[in-house]
Image (tube, rainbow, N blue to C red; front, side, top):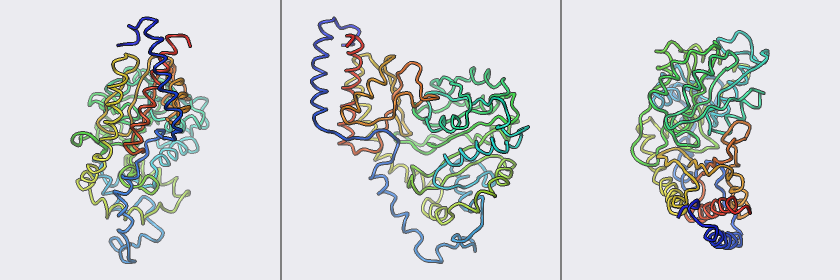
Amino acid sequence: MEYNKMSPAQLEAEYAAVSQRFEKLKGKGLKLDMSRGKPGKEQLDLVSDILTVLQKPEDCVENGFDVRNYGELTGLPCAKTYFADVLGCKPEECFIGGNASLTLMYDLIAKAFTHGLLHSEKPWCKLDTVKFLCPSPGYDRHFKVTESFGMDLITIPMTGTGPDMDAVEEAVKDPAVKGIWCVPKYSNPDGIIYSDETIRRIASLKPAAPDFVVMWDNAYCIHEFEGDYVPFPDILSLCREAGNPDMVFEFASTSKVTFPGAGVSVMASSAENIKYMVSLLTFQTISYDKVNQLRHVRYLKDKAHTLELMKKHAAILGPKFRTVLDALEREIAPLGIASWKRPSGGYFVSLDTEDGLAKRTLALCKEAGVVMTGAGATFPYGKDPRDRNIRIAPSLPPVAELEMAIDVFCVCLRLAALEKRLGK
């Protein structure tokens, strides 16, 4: 029965039963982690044979070039070809980085502040105000990057088809608005795939700022865990066709394909943008890890081969997500105290409680030994205006631990909802 339909006596009885269940869970001394979207040990073991791809000195030579040496700042040609195949862009539009695409994103924002972007009138640090659009709920690390440079972060509501484009199109009329964060496929945390119309409207934006930048973090472009691979349009081509060839930078990595701690990342943009960024990055590094680039190309081969590998990841991830989603359907859905998305890819389940319950729910979870992403993290400045969004990350724990963790979560959410109704 929904909690809103219970009598005071029924609520008190329910509170007593759920409290008893909570105390029993606390007594187990659990130490479970659902805080970040980390691949589990089984996934890491799945791809550990990548470590043996390069065994002899001659294995480190690619088209006559010894990858152990200096050179190739923009990345190995074979690595550019690989990522162009995955993303649908051109090899010359790719810049290959280290293990974290976040580093490339940070570098881009940092260079905008110290030197300006290709079409900047002046470095952003010389401007009175710099604003950035943050579709929310969204990825906390994105927001922290722009917050760390003192930008004014503007919340843009997320819809079922991506950012509220009416709000975006209105916001970019302000020349102080310099960019927008986007996770277009299986968005973090909602798991939303941007619609074709949303993508078209983003590519066709006419911002007042000539150096407005779309930060297109395509982190989950091949990360289905249910159903077939969902093709995705090339945002670089769409921006070029719309007359905005230099407006977008696309990012991706192999972090959740091979090893998060030893993967390869890519930044894709117009050839002109890449040339400009190289002119700045040449003072920062001679090159990223080309041995690792070659190891990944030899191991992953191409997009088709990588998608076959991703099916093996899906076979590990799918049961974990079903464990979480089935528990929510069983334990929470009948009570009418929360709603959530049922994603088919990505790394998160996004749940919205009734207003005012997220912080209390997660505090109870911590008390019972389950660590989750902090309340408010999915909004700029870590402040969820309705205190309701919770990001659940099912990927790291084994299924047996995940069953316990989601059991704790459901009990804590129920307890928080009952406390609110009973004024506890």
